[in-house]
Length: 410
Ligand SMILES: [Zn+2]
Image (cartoon, rainbow, N blue to C red):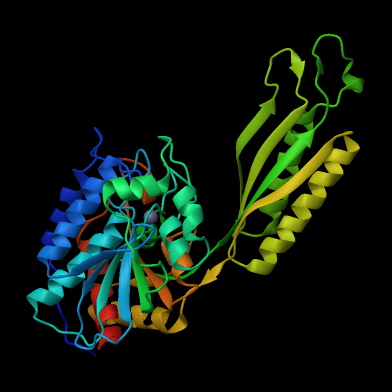
C-alpha cells in the first residue's frame, strides 16, 4: 500500500471552472464540439497546464492528446487515465472534462508530493467522444483500439463541410504517431455517473464493472402512397400504421424481457410526409441496449421476428439493417478489485455499477486492462447545461484515481 497522497480539491474545482469558461453558454454550460474553434481553445488550455506541470505532450494522427509524466523506467508501458474535452451543443462542465482534469490533478498532486513512479503516467484526451460535429462518436478511442481506421476518421465530413483531416491540421492537432502504437499497462477513466443511482444511494464512488451492449436497427417499412380522400380504409398499405404497430410490439417485448433491457425509437422519417397522402414509406431507428450479449441477441431476434410478422399481416415490406453493434464490455477484474479496495481504504462509500452510457473506456478495454470510476452528479442530469457535481465528490474520485494509478505505476 502506498502512503496517502492528497489531491487538491480547490485546484481541481478551479480547473473545471476555468475550462468551463471556454465555449461558455448563458446557462452555465459549454459548447465545445470536437475540433471546433472552442475545442481548440480548450485543448490549448489543457496542453498549457500539462506543460506547466512538467509533462511531455504529444498528439497522434487523429488528434488524441497524450500528456506524459515521466517515470523512472522509460521502457515501462504507461499507466493511463483520461477522457474527453469535447461537449454536446448544450453540454455541461463535467461530462468528460472531469476525467481529463482529474488526471491532471493526479499529476499535479504527485508533483506536490515529489513522488516518482517507475512507470510513466499518461493523461489522455480522446478526440470526438460526443460525435456531434462529425461521426463516428468515440472516434479517437476507436482509432486507438483499431476499431476504426485513421483514413475513415480523416475523411469524415464535419457539420461545417470541412474534413476532419483539414480540421486537425487547422487546429494544430494532427500528430505523427499512429493511434494504438502506444501500449498502456492499464487505463482508468473517471467520469460523472450521468445517472441518479449514486446520489439516491448516497455513495461517493461507483466502481464500474461493465458497460451495456448497444445495437441500432434501421427499419424501413414500405407500403404504397395513396390519396387520403379516395382510398377506402381496407385498400390501404399504410407504412406508418404498420411501423406504429411494430413500435408498440417491440416495446412490449423489451418491457417483458427484464429490468435491464432498454429500447428507444427516437428517430422517425415518414414519406412523403404530406397531410393528404397515405405514408408509403417509413424509416425508423431502434436503439437497443442490454448488458448481456446473449440476451441482447435473443431480444434482437424476437423483435425482428415480430416486425416481419406485422409487416406480412399488413401487406407491407420491411427491411431491417443492423447499422451499429457495440458488444457489452466487462471491465478488468483486478482493476475493479483494486478500485473497490482503494475507495474502502480512503474511507469513501462505494458500490459496483453498470454504465448505461457508452464511454471511451469501452474501446480502450479491447487493448488494455481497463476500468472506470463514477462519482455522483446532481439529479443524475447530464448532456444539459445544468449538469453539476460536488467539489468533495470530484476530489474523492480523483483521490481514488490517484491511488489506483500509483499502485500500478510502482
Ligand atoms: Zn462523457
